[in-house]
Length: 458
Image 1 (cartoon, helix red, strand yellow):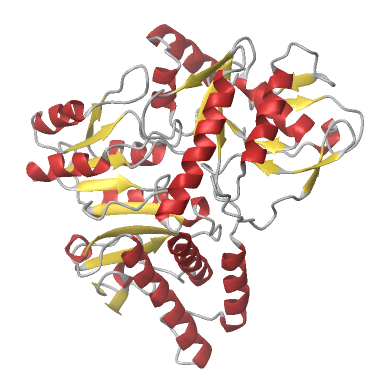
Image 2 (spheres, rainbow, N blue to C red):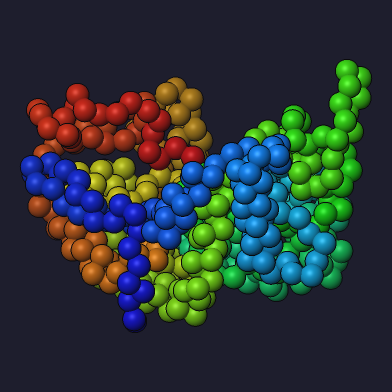
């Protein structure tokens, strides 16, 4: 593999460890959020002096800000392969907001059915359940399903109003056969939404999907912008998801005349900084090229998963032989997932994700939990006890990850699983389910612990 030679803002920053030393921080949590590409940070800094209101001012800076915002919007359509189509790009906060936006705008009735899968992130499960019935494509023990399972879900009656499916799993990294899935849905007249949050930084987005949503914070533009792309006709009538200034042509005390999409869907002051950042990230990924990104991903993923498979006591979750992103999700025999993540951080300066990854139904299937076990966990959580929450550990690589980074992680994993005692003791917080090292002083002392939600919730 030829290293991409990319460094993100913040890479190599020294962080404290419990032995009193500082180590360069290694983020293996790209599947959750990525750092900023230098070109993204530089473009934001360049634009900042011209920051002003968008779509609302006659001044020079407002005109410049509006132009930058609309150029970013146009760039998202090109990135999604929508040239020559009457589609719109709605700039949102993230994928979750985009899917909630679409769920509202489709005008679903309680009796309608949306076909989705058990592989989905909660962002592509929960919005549909608030409005209509859900039908699920089940997975096998490896966390995958075949195209016949999708066909069966599409052919069941009533016909689904929509197929909502991820392009790649945020848990296992499995890349779905999305083009074939879209073809099957379209052959039956069913439109398709693709959750592209995990796919967008690694592979081209499916141009034939009716709707696609993705986030900047997973593709090296962590400035709070995401995108929903879909046909203009889907947003041309009816009330928008958000009501407010900028979405209207005329308002009096008894009537509102909504403006045209996409502005109709973007009430309030637009996040022009996020749009500028996203545009810069799209340009950077396009310049690097998908072939180079794919080669980089494949080499890292193979090194990561093969290395973990050789460590006694480690069990990888997900498909053994499939198209996957550079992601490895695993459990260690006899060691809580939250403790593994805490030790990697406090002792080695390595950041990973643990828990259920905002995909609880999928993870319970990957872990092979039965109904009684799931109910026991449910009852404990209802009582405020999260110490026994099921979960796993996920290491995920990005553009700046190197083979050396993977080797550093694998060395740490071998030490953790060796049976040697940890250098400090760890306690668990029953409210969050997280572990924290017991230390009398320094940055890892109990007094320095930040208050907040559990690292593992989702």
